[in-house]
Amino acid sequence: MRRAGYALLLLVVLSGTAGPALFGVLPTAAQIATTATTTDTLNLRSRADLASSILTVMPKGAAVTLTGAESNGFRPVSYNGTRGWAFSTFLAIDTPPAAPSTPATTTTAVNLRSGPGTSYRVLAVMPGGVGVTVTGASSNGFFPVTYNGYTGWASGDYLRLGSEPAPVPPPPPASVPTGTAVTTAALNLRGGAGTSFAVIAIMPGGARVVLTGQTANGFHSVSYNGRGGWASSAFLAVDGTAPAPTGTARAIDNVNLRSGPATSYSALTVIPRGSGVTLTGQVNNGFHSVSYNGFTGWAFSTYLDLASASPAPPPSGSGIPFAVTNAIVGPVRGGPDAAIAFARQSGAIRLDEVERYVREIYRLAPQIGFDPAILIAQSALETGYWRSSWWQYRLNPAGLGITGDPQQGEASQTFASGTMSARGQIAHMHAEVFGASRALPDVLQGTDATYQRVFEAGWAGTIVTIDDLSGTWAVDPQYAGKIVRVGREIFP
View 1 (cartoon, rainbow, N blue to C red):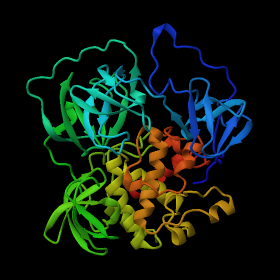
View 2: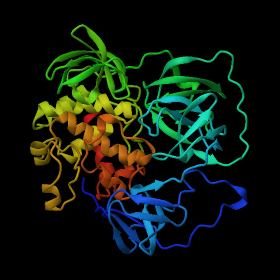
View 3: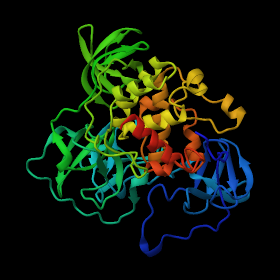
View 4: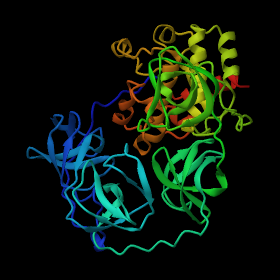
């Protein structure tokens, strides 16, 4: 991936302070904060862009004063008497405490959690526009609140503090589905019950969701990967079964077999490193359902080698021809067997790792929502059909960290296996497509050493189609067209 170059850490700009809210509009909890702390070494810049001059460099842990509203991903701040702009990604906002029993209103559908963070379980999904009571000071950007008999924590980003009257939501229908459902196609998770509401996440086809008890306007309230929202009922199979790999897998390290798909569930036994397990056909929250030695439960996918697993049946999108206008988030095309046969015919080096790479791409990419055929074609292009030295010696699948600078290339990441290569490429694409709008799944955490550079370069969340990869993933203006050409070769 020959990058145009990464601007070193980011941020901060000269500006006047923001005035009071206009026309009586109340600020959100996050907006009323006045101070913040840098989470890494951070540039204080003269304007809200990466091309502006650096006024000073603020060390990690420095306290700054916020002087206005965010612009272009930067916040105006004051540090040691110098005013400028800092990149918001590296600022931890210090939310001021709220007075006990402060009324607030949710600005969109928001999870009520058991603790102050996204790792805590969801107690309920509060619809947008409902009244809640803030009962104390914030912690980690979350406020303790009470809602409809529940007591928990809600993100301050989605609370509007004050006595603003909240609309009373209509009562739910007498009979509302509960339990689980499966998406029948890639489906938007929205902030409210309608297509006019913002998209919170894109759920891939075959994803399992939890029905949280409300229907409105042809939508169900659901929870997906710990995020609450609304999904169109037309694309939900209630109490359906998510397609998932079946067959066998092997533990690549000692791993707990748990009673449910999360670390909060009890451990039934420990699966020793190298042990074989049987995949029983479900994937949820980064875990696979498995059977081992008479036990049936859930194992963390990161510690399973799934090279021998049979992938979920894909080809709903097999008839779509390759073109630069193809969306990265899209239906599955092609299949692993065709890609592996092509690699073999092309004289690929380390074919066993190519097979691991291909099967992991086809297993994991559809769970994220990506068309795996696009990632396969990109890898074949970047590695010279898996014959380059970068693949032979580092198993680098897509030029990750390779910019044309010999020193950077020498320091680039070496992947332990084709499985980890696939995860690194998917993690990088996740940053390019979703940015900070969607949390990186646990199975992808730490797999791409260049993940943060996508945010530093300003490309995070900007990629929609293959064409968008030209000039971002690689400086070659013909990059997208070459991916399409290779894709047509592999999947004619």
